[in-house]
Figure (cartoon, rainbow, N blue to C red):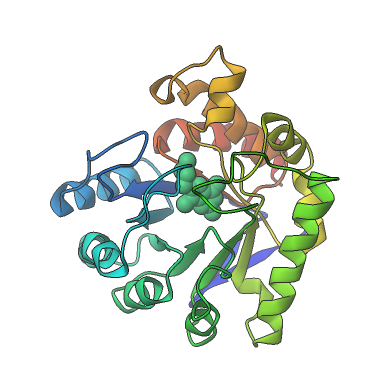
Amino acid sequence: MSASFWQVGSHRIDVSQRSLVMGILNVTPDSFSDGGEFADVKTAIARGVAMVAEGAGILDVGGESTRPGAAPVPADEEQRRTIPVIRGLREALGDTVLISIDTMKAEVASAALKAGADIVNDVTALTGDPAMLDVVAESDCGIVLMHMQGEPQTMQAAPQYTDVVAEVGAYLAERVARLAQMGVASERILVDPGIGFGKTLEHNLELLRALPEISAAANRPLLLGVSRKSLIGALLDDAPPEERLWGTVALSAHARQAGVAVVRVHDVRENVDAVRMTEAIYAS
Ligand code: 8Y7
């Protein structure tokens, strides 16, 4: 595989050689699969430190649930939840880990970057808040652009595409081009097909089958989030979220085989093992 770089601040990461596992650190009382468990700041920091010990290269800190039907959270509440955790993680872990802020709000992203975050992970691909483009343009942070059809509250009602792979690829390419217009180097960006965000099971499977094509369309490496998602439940006899680990691990092995740079997961150790096995076979 030819070299392909992701530039995050001063870190120049060759993601064709080594993929990263991103650990999900939800600091929300309503998150669907770890509800309330990490609401306390100290507990969240300890959980982040443990994820790094398990092999996470990135921690994705989020203070607003984007699951279908979740209630929106005001910016000040989102900051109250996430900023102390980001500060604490930076203090505890120094530069041994990258920290991303999972937010759709410019104000939250800006505060998070000031508190030590390295990456903005925005499920609206920087379209949700008009001020978000300026926040990333004025920073040297890494950026994750995710595709979503519709809005979190209603996106699963009736997702429709003529050609889901072509449409998602074109959308992500357009968002990368828009950022380039603003002077944002494309090397700072990863793109993400947004599994489960306004997609039926069949749409999700088509996207998972076409990962290299989507990366090629946007000319950027991919981040993929499938951890414990409902497509896994749907494919495994309606398994509830706490029984979707093995399905997630299988998809992480597939993702790495398809060249995905970063997998976003709840269960770090198990997914690190899957990715390492695949890399032993394919990476050169
Ligand atoms: C994703 C995500 C979620 C994803 C990126 C969940 C915040 C829902 N999913 N960000 N966020 N990609 N980039 O089930 O797939 O974790 S929230």
